[in-house]
Image 1 (cartoon, rainbow, N blue to C red):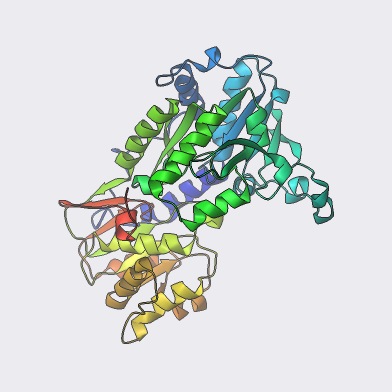
Image 2: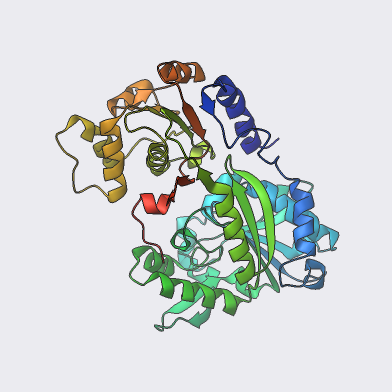
Length: 424
């Protein structure tokens, strides 16, 4: 059982089973929710019958150099990669012909030792490329490389964009005979989506240009398409996840077609339809504890507010271990002030308005003093949640509320709408 699976099992035992069914509706839990898929079996089926693309055994052959690239923040990267490696092995692809290219973020998810892949400062001026190093993976030794966006030698020029800026991509991806990207769509609008390859596996200057947001969403995606087409990354594998961070589907096929179908499937899984206002809401954040942050907290609070009475309590059940930054502190502390600071972002102003009007409780990995200093109620066990809910007749549980697309009556709000982000 993986760490992620263990975390999922724990929340059922620690929380869901303790909340009485006669008070708490649990629409994302129970017999109407599909069981987790057999990932190796589903991966095999997807690769054997891709959407508008030849089967893997007609596009990958022994002797090909293969670059597998994992999108940063891919859920369950070890399980997904193991399922793909199993299929490549069945095609008699030599493990020595495979290099898995990942970001530093994914390296942390996989628990790789930084000493293995970080180039010492005194060696950087020599122009050494990022190291390719073996990792014992299931029953195989697989070569990995961790993307270094500041390493010039680790990138190759592909083409220029419409403005004449150079497009550089990780050199291993450029040199490989076959590139197999594994990505995942996020719930929400097109403006919230990221590409598996670009700009994460490009040079730091490109990443900086994209993060600044100087260009339009349309022009950025045109550049992403140009980078993928020039690289020859026409096949895409997309992992569709639902609440509880469970893998529900594997989509494979022509990049344009499979991205559309995976996005539709993802948004269907994350649509949370609730026609009545509940008096108390328990909202969970179930990703890996090291990945959870205060943006997740803010988004979960907003989602919970959309399905609850205006003055009912909200309980956020999380494993957040990071300390809040000054803006989160300012938003939470606004409840003790006359007004809400206009200097806060739109999302934090909304968070501030909610904590000002109703009690918000937090279960996290932080100590009581820190949580209570924010003006939040401290929760440690499900028994405490049950006590909070005692004066109220109705409650509802929302899994991974920070990602849910709330549909309340005729009103539909995604996280991007809630947070004031623009849609294309």
